[in-house]
Amino acid sequence: MSLLNNKNNLVFYFSTSEYELLAENIYKKILFSNFKDATQKIKMMIDNEELKDKIIVGAFPFSDNENGNFYVVDKFKKSEKKLSDRERVITLLEHKNKVLYKKTFPSDDVFKNNVNKGLNYISSGLIEKIVLSRGYIIEFENKIKIDQIIKRLYKNNALGYIYAINLLDNGFVLGASPEMLVSKRGYKISSNPLAGSRPRSNNLYKDKLLAEELKHSKKDLNEHKIVVNYIIKNLNEVCTNIKYHKLPKLINTNQLWHLSTHIEANVRDEIKTVFDVAEQIHPTPAVCGFPKLESSEKISELEQYNRGLFAGLVGWCDENGDGDLAILIRGAKINGNKIKIQAGAGIVEGSVPSEELKETSVKMKTILESIGLEI
Image (cartoon, rainbow, N blue to C red):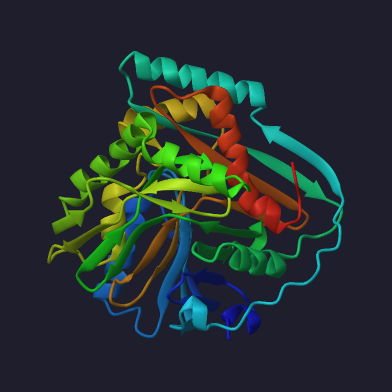
């Protein structure tokens, strides 16, 4: 049985092809001033044995300098059933929920202009890559049914990392991330960066051609290399015995083909938690750009809005410091009858503004399809 078929008060949900985790009660809410502060507080709680029979769950902002909070939960269930062994999740027929209002931010023209500005920064040598985002704010006639959207995400994204977190008075954040920033079990960690993509086609022959085109694209291979090199360099600070394939592999979601590299390593003795590792690499060039500081500054300049949790991290950590932190993408924030959806595209030399606009639209389909909406 999937835990989604037997839930009560949902605080947090996280699913992979290997397990499901469902939290139902908040024992304590912990505030932090930035990601480093969160990491230190979690490490202190583990050192003081405050997490016995408890786990930490949460969503963490894109900016590692932004404040936020996480939860300590004392009532949770974890099922080690693999996806193929779980009972099918049942979704109800979606009744039409009338759209009252829709806003695009920024507009298509402004986004394409931002891409051109980003390309100018790249050609000037200031940065090598920048990830620029856009989104939708949609208001519906009736309240959005959170449980049904989570179930549809689960059903439609079998190989993704399905996540949902209750923000209490601020609604829910939920989605289906294809990207694991860092997973830790004992002294072993893994990371699976994605960078470089192509929209998929319903035509099998064309879909295969798109995959092969991506696999040999100089532009996309360069974009991917920037991300992998950054992660490897920074993992060296906290890990040993780092292993990865020199050439990326192809993976896919229902919407996109991605270039993917699976990285494995052993953590150094002083590294206690999955957050210690994440602190070294978040945010990666897959969601920010490179170099990190310069691209972050240009994102703020061009986007002119706070990303908040979008492109941040979502996941959990237990009393041993083990856990999973996925990148918070292909998701949305839902509060009552309103939904905010965001998606980004990596800009490197050779990027085409209209193609990057199309990529963000395809990425937002993960959520749009779960609410039965086409835009």
